[in-house]
Length: 258
Ligand SMILES: NC(=O)c1ccc[n+]([C@@H]2O[C@H](COP(=O)([O-])OP(=O)(O)OC[C@H]3O[C@@H](n4cnc5c(N)ncnc54)[C@H](O)[C@@H]3O)[C@@H](O)[C@H]2O)c1
Image 1 (cartoon, rainbow, N blue to C red):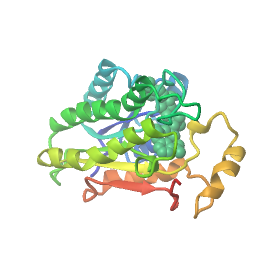
Image 2 (cartoon, helix red, strand yellow):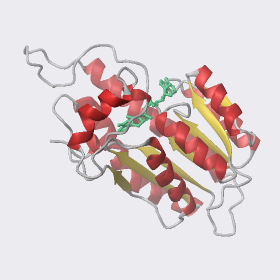
Image 3 (cartoon, helix red, strand yellow):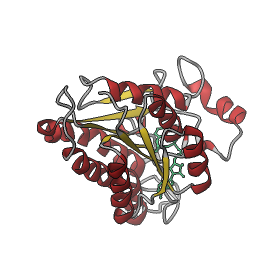
Image 4 (cartoon, rainbow, N blue to C red):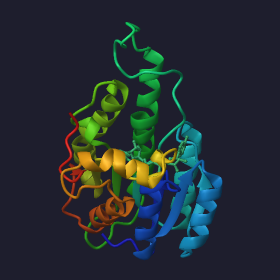
């Protein structure tokens, strides 16, 4: 699908995956709408991108904020792509193991928070973006838009202690084919990317060298963490290739969580 003269909405747009994807899609001629709560990084990126890019402060925990961001994008130009790649606020408590080493049960609140951040909010963005795309004139190819969600390899093989995160990321995998089937009559595609371990701001507390030394060796080939631009390359290819639909692509250097 051609996205020049179209708008593109990116949640977590000031982040590692989101920022790299913003650069790739702006280079393809899209007007990028960067949605994030990191105002300084978001504003700076919009300026760097040019090409009519804007930063919109968007809290993915707030449906009205998401609705407003989608409206802004659709007003700029027909919304052709939504890339959903946000993190979220910290949860209400520690833990991830259903029964912790000290015998404590994982709280329902911690589980529900992760599902809200990584799954419910992704559905919310997906549904508002799909609604806006459904009003687009179709391109000559019959396509109106594409939605790319971000899962994780933890959605396939969850590590101990990751029950809430794995459930949420598995939910992304589960809904992708159904979304594609639902939206097929509208000419809107749904895809997901399941990254392995990538050096993004999520590892911000560690230096790049320390993160590579800790995580790089567990990745078979290449023996290093992923570069966010490798995610962005795949996202841009998904946008351009109309035959990719209804599936989750692993992007992990053959990494498998134990
Ligand atoms: N980095 C990895 O190894 C990896 C692996 C698998 C999946 N993922 C997933 O990729 C997605 C993006 O993560 P990343 O690694 O690029 O992290 P990142 O920290 O670089 O980017 C996340 C962005 O989300 C933003 N954000 C935080 N709270 C928000 C809110 N309430 N509303 C809107 N935006 C908010 C942050 O400001 C940040 O810019 C996440 O869903 C993460 O689970 C990451």
